[in-house]
Length: 568
Image (cartoon, rainbow, N blue to C red; front, side, top):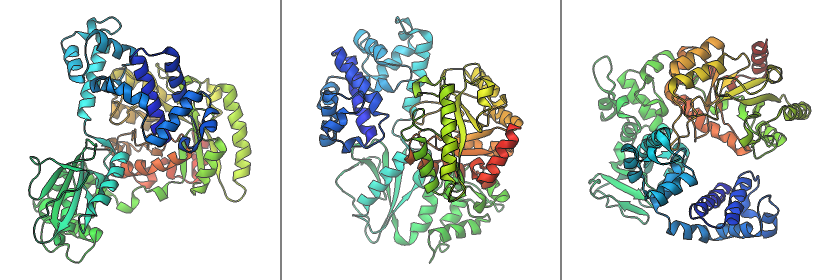
């Protein structure tokens, strides 16, 4: 069991205890434990009873519960609570703005125990009449319900890729060749279908395997459709002849809009891809290069095969110009134990150096982020003093530097949350929104514009605040925000966390058109979080981001020169 699994179990138990009006002290014990366990650095599953009780907020009772979770994979307290809680009520916790108290009213007082009935109550205006709700809350619930419905059956990129690898191993037990295709190969930020190509010879296979449940109505002789274990995402297995695998992999990788594109002779890419003989004797890369060659355009990488401007892009750029993990020279926007990170500043910096990077930009939360132990001014001074000492220590054998940054909260009026003399003490500033996420487009855009126009802002962090599959971003006028960044020399972040991937890749082309640089930032709260930049790189490549327009592809020397010019 991972730390996240344990914390999620403890946290949900606390919510359901409160929902069922359980003992107040028991609720508080679970709530405090979840809060403190979320900040624990080590592996909870490796600790024994005495070690667990040494963690702040973890008493003997909770320590026993953690051991139960680790040894059995579940918690009896939670199972008993789940048994007497309708599934629809539990799903209400996904709705933005609904806490335990409001869910309790909806369930106990209004008798609403599923999302469908809740939506009907919102649509007929019943919710707005309930004390403590009102029209705005009703509207917010409706919007959140519509968003949840639109995301049903989907997985984030990271979860989908992991599940696809698990299924791949299972399919390889039954088929000679298996290839992952579709949205996974295109590295889509969210995935609603896991597509596999399997080869056969002779008679069509009749696939049956433990863990796979076929949807017979949706299936056909050449396509198996269904589910895998308890996962809600659709699984699709396509049977292809061995000599057709290369061409079919090309076809099923691409979005249909990509395949519809026609060349100067009016021939579609799909028809060229299905032409016989092109791929004979080649490997997958060679086969796809041959298909594009016959079509009359240079090779287009799988990530970009979306039908969104990639044919124009390839005429003006080269694939080798695209950003890669290896072209990144530093890691910006990271958190340490100074705010809500799990590892110390020295640990974060040392691991960054071990990975071969030239600089670490530390950007802990700022003073208004009390929920994340944001840095008071005295703590900023303390951190800067430690950075000075660590920079001497870490640069002995080769150049390496910790850059003094901060993730400064953008307040409701667009101002940053430190006085100018404190802002001036940083090497760079990531300006981000973390509160008041319900503004309309005009106000949200105005807020960002004011922050961008602040001369101390270096990078605009996660521009819309979205959390994939769980929270829509606040609405903004993308063009106005990007134009403002262009006018003020502000970099835009591609937040590489698979939970965010914000800026959306679809707006990268416009940013490049306006000569705005982008920074692939992991928003890491622990050392392993640096590796999230792989997701950011995939999203950046999908949008056509080149190395020369990637902010953290600058060398340490060039980065320092840039930041010094920016300060002047």
